[in-house]
Amino acid sequence: MVVITLQRNKCIGCNYCVELAPEQFQMSKKDGKTVLLHAIEKKGFFTIKSFDESIFDTSVEAKKACPVKIIEVKRI
Image (tube, rainbow, N blue to C red; front, side, top):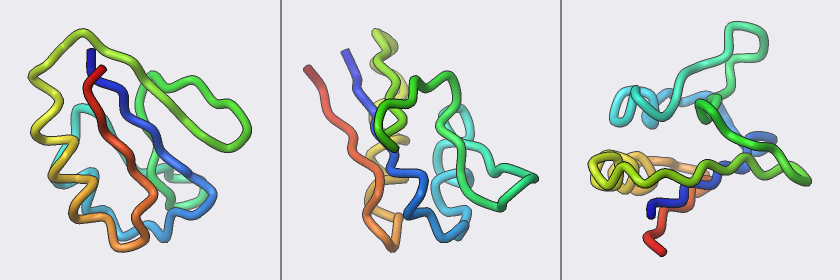
């Protein structure tokens, strides 16, 4: 299982995550911050859990590219 977590309130809207993993992330037209698609929000953290292992590599690349380090990706 792949778990992706985003601290959206710290997002600066650089768009790297969307470019590298568009199937997980998109930019909000309302505030210019990234949105983790299909995520559940809890205390400012947006999380998805997926059995689709194919999203792992692109999500890790998005994590590495994030200048404010607000994306976590792990396998459990």
